Length: 354
Ligand code: SF4
Image (cartoon, rainbow, N blue to C red; front, side):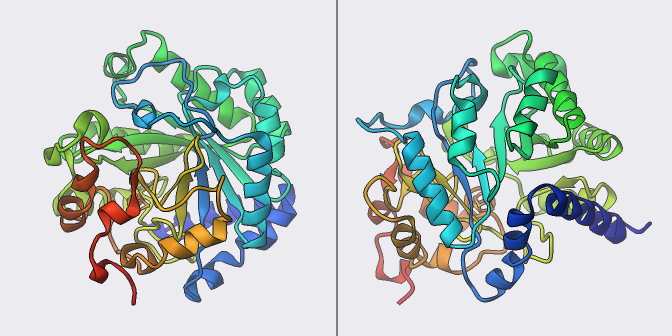
């Protein structure tokens, strides 16, 4: 089977599974490519429902956001789900913090209407036992994204400041897969580790064992704030494209898939809502374009789409790859209390679609 056919076969199998398990989501998801072609947003919403976590990872950015008096409630989640459904959107991801630390996580899932949405979580895997994975699948969860900082146990544990973190993450990957959940290994790619055997081995491991590998390129944020040396360059990007051709399970979010155009999906293809309701165009852009506790989601998204970088589509990752965008805009929120209002970042008339 050619690489292209293999990729198609993987996508088709996932779509058939969705059609069987969640027909209402399937009906929406097959319309996304047409929506995109018409220039409409098709957004997957990442929700940092609660920033609480059991680990203290070096790279964590969740604690950088200013605390506010009001946080999202279950009723707010339901309202977001109803608004997103009315817009024809069909995908949520619950991040954090660590979502599985939440005692009421089943209620979080229910509030997000699992019959109408494909729902994933981003987790460190610590609490994802075999029983928990089966329970979550039965409760309507579809996808689990588990971070693996390195194929090397000692490096992963050091980064997570926890001796057991690697073992728990590996166990969680298998528990998730065995429960029938789509299982994604998330791995951060820096300029330093991009073109290495470790990256190739991880891609091979994912491909051979039925996982997906999400290659998340490094951003100069958090522990790397201002460190532009960790950003990938054109040669690294080329290497990752070739890796995807050899191992279709290894992919970046800018690669085309399911008949959708590739490129940066900031706001139009995905956006983040913080614990405090602020809407960021991308989980890595700590810029608020509005707050869902104050305004309808559509009003906020329509406002954001007037910013030309989000209303138009960039072929490369704005936050981690587009050096001009990073130098001019991302650097404007370095060292500031977060998030920063979009009007402090996009200050010129030319930043907006007229
Ligand atoms: S800026 Fe990068 S990480 Fe954010 S949506 Fe675009 S491609 Fe994805």
